[in-house]
Amino acid sequence: MDTRALSRPNLESASVQVSEINFGLNMLRQSPATESMVVSPVSVIFALAMVQLGARGRTKMQINRVIADGATDDAIVGFYSDLFKNINDSRGVQARIANGFFVNKTFPIKEDYSSVIAKKYGATIKAYDFRQSAKTARLIDNFVSDKTDGKIKNLITSSAVEDAVALIINAIYFKAKWYYEFSKRSTTNAVFYHSAADKEKIKFMKEFAKNRLYAENDVVQVLSLPYKDTSYSFNIFLPKKRFGLEELRSKLDGGMIQSLLSRLDSTLLTISIPKMKLEKSYNLKKALEAMGVTDLFDSESADLSGISKVGLYASDAKHRAFIEAGSFLML
Image 1 (cartoon, rainbow, N blue to C red):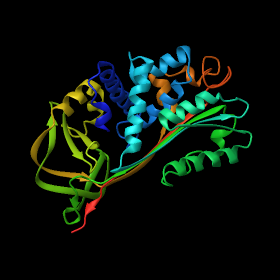
Image 2: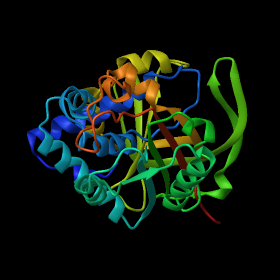
Image 3: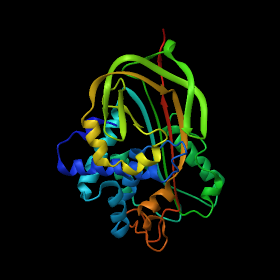
Image 4: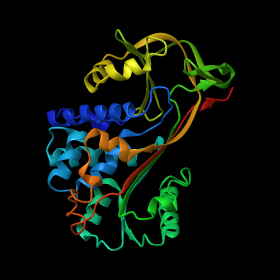
């Protein structure tokens, strides 16, 4: 997370931060605790913020409620456009975001909307002939691949385009080097438990007796590992209770996470973490509807009149995240 964009002492900005964390937790809760997943809540929020700029009435209200409950439109746009700029301008990490709204060509797009989402969120809106579903799927996949330096491919199938009116597409590729690099010599194979009944042997990176940022409360331990660009950190939340992820998910909220991160302190630790290369797709439409964003996907209720003529709605929303964490110091 880019702390430069999150450190402003504005009360509305602080409210947006908590909403962002809670949004990520709500995304997490939409999947079974036994299922491995990788999502980027902030990347998804950029997609919703893109749509929010053209939404009106109750459609906008529902989006606002999940990404920044209680904040004004100006606070939402200001906060997330600043955050996008900071992420996009970072030099020490690879953060490649594909953020697009693809509509059937029967819906003319308002030029001012197209220009403002490009300026604020680096987003794209395109009108294609959805009757040519294979061609449209290929164009969308090419867009995602280009934006993520070829790392994310085949996000959309032609069947997803058939009979669709509009598709929200969001993907992110993230890779960064550790500030404190792990020695390859201290890497071992060990058992990783996805759940009590599901385990596998994988590579673990280890450090012995090192001072690292750490905090805890009665339910969770937190380890914060900075990247070379120290405005980003890899924060690991480990339940104190073994196989207690489901219980932890129910207890965590934005306030608790902020409290823990504010109490991080240098602590002498021995740590062991998996070497990770994770790529997963996420059923974004289902998750958003469960959170209360329903009008956006309803042909009768959606109000996207700031984007195109009456009748436009999103048929589906797709998200994929690809995160690499695990570079070594070669010794």
